[in-house]
Length: 277
Image (cartoon, rainbow, N blue to C red):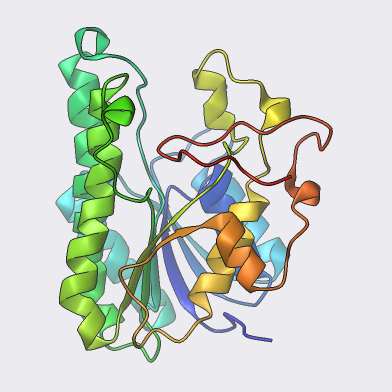
């Protein structure tokens, strides 16, 4: 079975949620994980820090490097990448997971929130890729995986929350561009998106979502693992959904990933098809 043993992953926003789940799945293989996130001290609204994540990674069988890093800060990203290379000898995989969200219409989106989303989501993904690529190009099987949706120009995804849609589609278009430039050089540049809403602590910041109708972050982590163990050469520019990836891996029963298998699932944003049971 394909493994990430000995591989070095640089994961943004890995102190909690989907990023941490991806880190823990890789750690079970014995991977090296650079946990690049802002959270160095506990937040009562959003539990988890780079230090608790590092401890969990070590307990799961991996090696961890806790890096306080604001991916809006070019110098901080450069320093985090250098620290990762110094600790582990290189970088094999970049996971662009960090993202900012504000689900409101144009008149209810403060420019501070608008700017934050653009800086973290699209610009942050570009900046982290730019910093990691010199090392990825030296890897035997390099991957960039970004948590971004399939590109869509459908107005019903833009009208309700223009700022957020622009930021997430920005990540998607960064993926397209990097795939076109670096895919032919052997870097697997792809995107992954969940078919249903994922139950993370960040949902507590968004009113009105029934967590029992969501899935656990492990479904995205398992799909990410299946992607990252693939041969990089010739595998780029794909916008993958977690269900589809797992089906290709022989998994067709997704009920263990549900918070409550008896409940119908909430489809994630930017998708017009319903998730499977």
